[in-house]
Length: 608
Ligand code: M6R
Image (cartoon, rainbow, N blue to C red; front, top):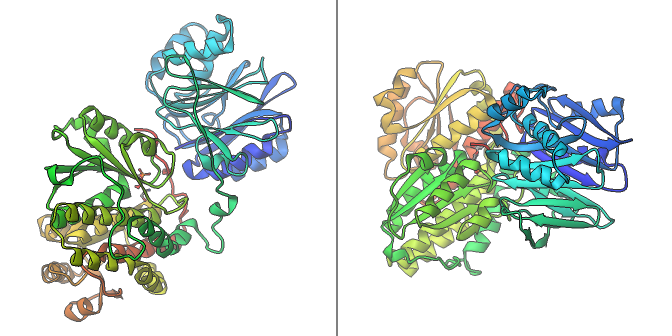
C-alpha cells in the first residue's frame, strides 16, 4: 500500500526513480510523484493516476538531480488528486510516506496556529511541515527528525531529504516496511520492498521497527527506537526483472493463474519428502498432542485459505480451529488458550491487520506460525516459525497462485498434525502425499477449461449480482470465487454456504442471477444438489462445476457446466479454485475493467 523509492547517487536519478515506481505500482496507483534536489532547490513533479501519467509529465518538465525520492500512492486521507500526491514538501524538506499518521489533525491545527500553510488534505503533509518547524530549532537534521518522530502517532515508512544537505537521505520505519539497498558504485537506495530495488542493488538491509537510517553515498548509520546506534545485517537479493514481466499473457493475473502447477510443485517439494511418500515438515515449537485449539488469522483470500484449513485440520487432526478475520481479531480481544498456537497467513507478509493480530497473539503468549510468500517480510521475521510458500512474486492485485501455495502448506500442516497425533496411519499418509504430489498435473488439466470459462464469462459479465455456493471446503472456495469476481469485475457477488441459501440469500435469485455451484462429488453432494435445485426452481442461472460423476448425478437445469478432473475430497479445493479464478478473470476482461490494478485496491494493505 503505497510505494517508496529513494536514490542517493552521483548521477541523475529521475529515470531510475520512475523505473522503481513502475515496479512498485502494484502497491498503489492513485497518483505518483518524484522530488529531486538541484541547484540548491527541491524540484518536484507529480501526477494523478498511474505512473505513465508521471512519465508523460516528466518528459515535459525534465527535472533531475543526483538525490531524489519517489512515491506511488494508495489514497487514505484525501482524494487521489495531484495536490494529495507525494512527495510533500516545503522550501526546506521533501518527504514520502507510507502508513497513516493518526494524530495528524491535532498536529496540523497546531502548526496552522503557528503560521504554517497546508496544500493537501493528506495526513502525510504534516510530517514535512513539522520537519521544517523543528529544523529551525535544532542543531542538526537528525535532531529535527527525532523531534518530529516523537510527535507522530501511527504507522510510517518515510524517506526524507533536506535541501540544505543533498549528500544525505534519511529513511525510517514504524509499522510499515523499508529496506536499504547498497549500491556498488557509491550509491545508496531506499525502497519499500525488495522489488523496488530490483536491478538497483543486490545487497539489502531491512530496517527493524523503530529504526532510523542515515544514508550517505558510501555509508549507512542506523539508530534503533531508543536512538542508539544499531547494526542490521545485509543480505543478497537477486530476483531479476524477468520476475515481473507478464509476457506472453495479457495480464499478470492470467500469467499467475497459469503458473499454479509450477508453484504448487515447488511448494510441495519443500513440504513433501523427496520420494513424495511422506512429509518433510519443519520442526514445530509446540507439541501437536497437547494443543486444544488452533487459531488461524488472516485477511481476504488468505483468510479463505485458513477457512479451508479449518475443515482439514478439524476433520483429519481433530483439533478445533478458530478462523478469524485479522481486522476483527485484535479489537475483540479473544481469550487465547494457555500455551496455545496461532497461525497467520499472508501472501505479502506486510498486511497491517495481520501484523497487529500477531502482536496480540504474542502478548497472549501464543506460539506463532506464519504462512508467507514474501521472504524477509515483516511477518516472516516476526513469527516463531515461518512456513514459506514458493509462489514467486505475485503482482496481480487479485491473489491466485499465492492462495494455491497457501493451501499446499496448510494441507501438509493438517497431515503433519494428524500424523504426530497418531490419527493417520503411515499408509494413509502416503496416499495423501501421493494425491498432493499429483496436483500439478491435475492443475494443468483443469487449466484446459479456460476457453469454456471465457464463454460462460460473457454471460456473467452482464449480471448485476452473482451467487457462489458450496458446502464444506467448497463453501470456502465459493467465498473465494465471489471475492475474486467482485474485486476485478466490480459485479456484486456473494459466497454462501449452500445450506444457508434458504435462510435468506435465495430471495435474491431470479432469472437474472447466475448461481455458481462448487460441487465436487463428495459426501455432501446430494445435499448440495438439492440446494441447487431450489435455486434453479427460482430461475437462477446455474453454472455447475463438478467432476464427471457429479455432472451425471445432477439432473437440474444449468446455464453451463464445467467438468473438472476427478479429485479426492482432500485435494478438491485446489482443483475447484481454478475455474472460479478463470471465471472471474474472463468476466473482468469482458467488462473491460483493469484486471491487474482494479479500482480502489492495492496489493499490499499496510494500513488498518
Ligand atoms: O498479503 P495478504 O495475503 O495478507 O493480503 C490479504 C488480502 O489483502 C488479499 O488476499 C486480498 O483480499 C486480495 N486482493 C484478494 O484477491
